[in-house]
Image (cartoon, rainbow, N blue to C red; front, side, top):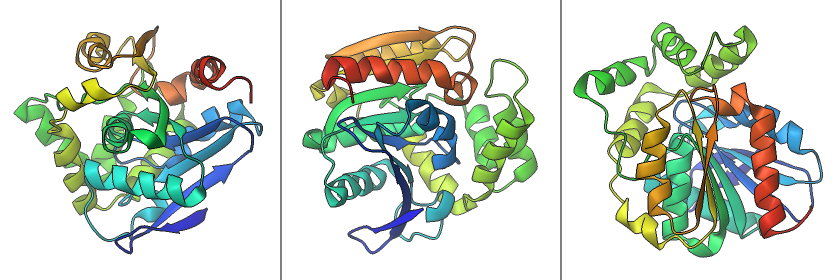
Length: 260
């Protein structure tokens, strides 16, 4: 892992791999880290330049000080991309990470050449019931509760190794950081601002994970969005169907920047 110091002094971790004209920034979801992207990045191969970050409060960045909210996450990504000299990038975000990608595209459009949003939390918030919100908050800092929650994020029974990987990542997320992040993305309120995003976007909706919401609350607001339904797949499509995610990324590359 490489290290990056943000403008507020927080030291963040990221993994940079590959080379070539295609420049991709991978952003994980809540209580996850960069390891959720291993299969996808491996499938893309070394000819693609990829940067997978551990957001502050997650993974190897779990000791980072400062706020853990969408605005700060997006600012960190902007600073990292600028420091690496790789702007503009295609931002590939999963779940909360897709919301961070939308925030970045609104706040720093010059940084983003495209968006691939997989099971994205809408910029209008998650719309959880009080019961569901309390259930998710209870997973923070509780390994047993987190494993039960994560095991339900797949269309079928998850592979034990894959589930273990997710649980290890969740275990690295301090409870206070997880809860602060949760309140930010679960109650996000910048949906109208996403209408200004001109970058091309692909919204990937797993069939078993409320695709109608992704169409209506995310894709419909983006001026240049393409909606893709991923059949027979759960929220963690990036782990269930990494090969299909690689294909989708390749389609975006072909349209925007040509072969790597």
